[in-house]
Length: 451
View 1 (spheres, rainbow, N blue to C red):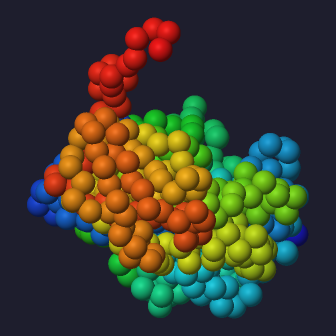
View 2 (cartoon, one colour):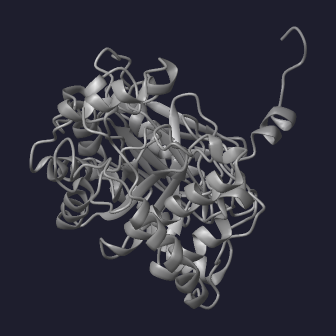
View 3 (cartoon, rainbow, N blue to C red):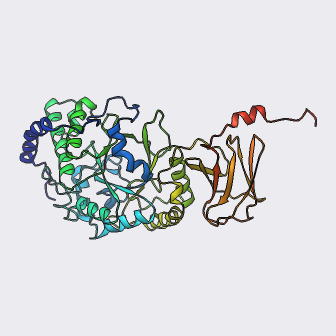
């Protein structure tokens, strides 16, 4: 097996150039270069609002975990969780061979699913680089596909009109300084220079990049990673980019993982989730989400002002698992018909229902019914605004509405759902819709005991 190594000459050249470039970088006026240290800080600068407008409108993106772990097929953390020796793990390069054109199929599926941007793993924790880096020969040009996967990905996303993002793991199980950097100052210097050099390449070689998605900062803190300087490099090369919060700085947005948890105080956030229980290809993992769950998660994120970054884990040949295709295609058919209720949606305060989700644009409330009730009616508790009209989005059928100050009762619905897997009702209100269910609990008239 060939020896995988770090190009010390390239690393030293990158390290020598870094101070000059960083000193010359002047982040754009009003920007956040670098973002502050408080991880709960709200995103509110004018430059942030400018850079992030497309992202807030997009709501839905595709995450792609693609690396040597696909060839192993037993989870992206298998190198560490199974304590696989580095020399043994490197052999997976022989079976990591995406067919030409596979990134285009990823992008086509993302577009069909209604996604607006894509984020691909440039380097995961395993340390293998999916591009033509000059800082290590452990990359996709020297081994595996022997092509620049990142270049193909960028071209494919742009061809489908999608925004481009790179995931980058700071943690590295392959690099000899990846762990010793915590206690050895010389190793830390080498490893940080290597890391900054790789990020510099990604920000330099592929044109305009829209998102940089850091991950796992172990074993260093922001000071150890020199994260302020790291972000200065990024913003200096890509002034329109947005970055997340996983290099131990606040960044532009937070990243709840495998859960939907809205931020407060105006801070941007994005919930990242898998379609089954694995990020990378895991051929035995059959715990798939169904299309209804995917749509409900997307609606919940949109309702609370967040984005939904949903993952696929391609097979070692780059093929997309058939279940991923089926689920995203079905969800995408619904999103295509209902995109106006999601893209650019405002934060929606009404949220309480046992069979429906809500989104909002201005004074229009969208009620997405996922469990169709018997009886031809639905109701909303505690809606404070007067309803001017209601209709079924798919058919345009007008519905009857009555309100008594506690219940908004919508009748005239058909016995069976006219749409699948969710039916959307369009409810026009006389103001921004608000819901007060506590008022219903306390003040709704009650009968005397025993009657």
